[in-house]
Amino acid sequence: MRIPKYGMALLNMTKTSLLQRTKQLLPARYSSTKESLSDPKQLNLLPYHVLPLKETLSRFMSTVEPLLTPTEMKRQMKITEEFLNGEGSSLQKLLEDVGSKEKNWLADRWLKAAYLQYRSPVTVFVSPGMTFPRQVFKDEHDFLAYTSKVIFGLGEFNDMVKAHQIPIVKMGNNELDNSQFGKVFGTCRIPRRGTDEIVYNPCSNYVVVIYKNHVSKIQHILYMSET
Figure 1 (cartoon, rainbow, N blue to C red):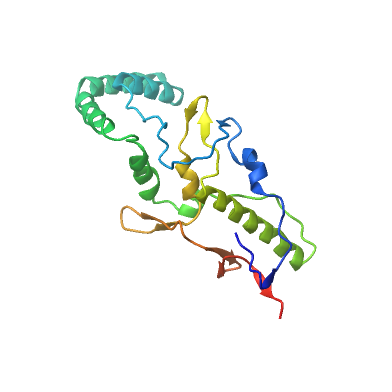
Figure 2: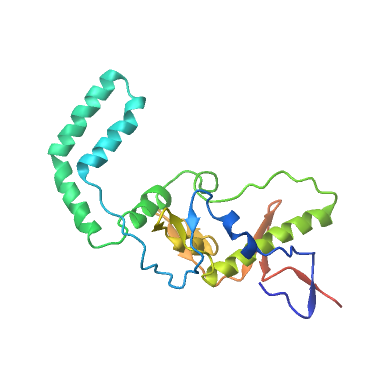
């Protein structure tokens, strides 16, 4: 994020670089390597395998058991067994064929079924967001200073993502998909009938501020002229 030379920053932005706090931004239970992500494709990323049908159904039964009465559980076991010995095998074969051709057969299908076709209010149920601790501001300047620091910090993080400087996140010795970081900013969900559309705008250079039903588009950074 660049501050124009001919102007001065509207507010005193934070000087603490997010680069020094990367570990705080990553999930605590995951480890990360020190090398930068030079190849966005992550050649060492493991494929997402299709689990055997029996294992999937076994996990399903373990999940629903606490939710069912003994009578309901007995009925569900019968339905599950019929599925295993019936159309389940042919459906599993179709899934395995897809899984052999795609590195992650679930990603796009999960995005479509769990998000883009989800009809409940997006802002409350689907959209990622952050809730900050309640603040007590002395005046309007204090409020704007806090907001500017947040925007500036997010801008620094976005610069790190674009430069592939976010360490590769791992679970144990296995890499996780770092491409998700690049979808945090510049992503827009367009309402469509049946299935919504996701549009990525990685070159966006502005933020949108919504306050008391007013929507403002702020280019690059907040600043004011010296004149």
